[in-house]
Length: 105
Image (cartoon, helix red, strand yellow):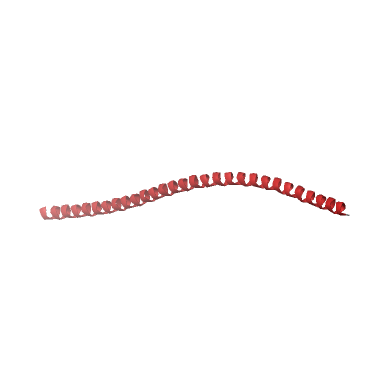
């Protein structure tokens, strides 16, 4: 009987060893999966940080563009004033030419 119980003990030990190996394998797969998820999470954090930096840079560029547009509006107003003055001067030249011609007659 000792041989029957020793063979059943060996069989139980082999089964336990096999189950333990399977559980270790499942745990290793779970750890690997967790590591991949953490790595993806850290990359998404990096991507979010990069997006925030890009957004801040874009905000600065928008502010600069707004300032440039304001300057261009002022320049357009000044060009309008200059155009009016040049136009008035051209009209005055025409009137002066007419006066000169009338004086020469």
